[in-house]
Image (cartoon, rainbow, N blue to C red; front, side, top):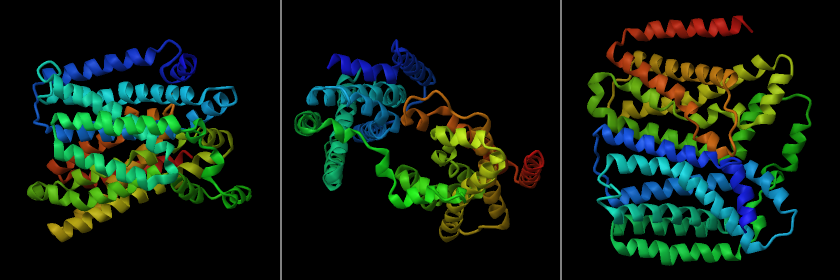
Amino acid sequence: MKMTAKAFAKKLFGTKYERLTRAFLIDIVVFWGLYIAGYRVRVASSVGYFMVSAFTAGVMWQALSSKDNAVELRHMLMLPYQRMEFVFSYVAVLLAYAVVTKAGLLLAALFAVSDWNPVWNPIKAIGMVVCMVHAALMAAAVFSLRKYWYAGIVWAAFLAGAIFLLGDRLFLLVLLLIFSGMSAVLVLCRADAYVFYEREGKRGSRKNYALRQRKKVSIWRYFFRYFVCHKNYMFNTVVMWCIALVLPYFLKELAGLSVMPMGFALLSLNTPICILLSCDRALEQAVRFLPGQKNAFCIPYCLFIFLCNMAADVIFCCSWQIQNGGVTAFAIAGAVFFALQSAVWSVLLEWHFPIRGWKIESDLWHHPRKYAVPCGMLLIAGAVAAFPALLPVLLAILAAEIAVILFIR
């Protein structure tokens, strides 16, 4: 068991486990930086427990679904192994990865800005750690029962209700540890190691294979098939559309301050669609190697991101008109500008500065570089909200950018 865990740990944390040290240092910097800022927020126990549980479970699920991990598993499963030792070694390493490198940042931020100080409130701090470990174990157990996905939904709904109903009562921790935690352990005891290995063939059918054999390649077909094969990207887009529906309700009290550009900027946070080259190394190699592929891929890619952003902006404008009214030509021009400018910058950043050196897809999905364009959009939105006359100038600059890009093709 020790040798198996060591093999997976070296892949995720580095040969000398340097990523663990780096993660701890980042957590300390985040905690101390937020703590000395003096900003405090009252966070209910149920909300904190749910945030940590949902985030850890999501990261654990992403790690379990990683295609890079599937490659490692394929090689490991060729060797003789003990079923339970292999399963628990694999789950334990991924649990450490999810808790230390990802959920640790959220935990440090909560401890810094809330009254959940681990020194003055040790029970709440222990509860947070219990929630993280339990969420990772539960995600692994549900992942091994993907065939019975409805059981996983019922299980997650029951625990979410228990967290919000019981709050910070001690019985909640007992429930998580004894009932749900032991249930997850029992499920993993009966799980076979092959349930964690997803063959790439399952992601496509013979029909998709036949499509790949055609000489005429369609970039748009690739985008569509990529969304179909990666349900989390499609889910993230649908979530952004739902946010576009409810966002006018939260911004209606500031309607007099021209905050619609801020809404357009927030809706550009659909970052997963902006890293197609970084997450598909084979595609990036093909695009960069074949002649004439720079414009053949980048221009449709820019239009694809623009259409995704514009769909959210159209939903936002319609919802704003229904709830608040007053959608003008200025707002429509702002929607076009933020959707297109975000797409242009995202493609340029992805082409010239792709994300490299990630171990599994979870590292890629949480990379800080993804948020460079949305942060820039938020800064521009603040400037446009304060000085609306800037929008025509920004539209002219955007037109010049596009002309230069097309000219230097």
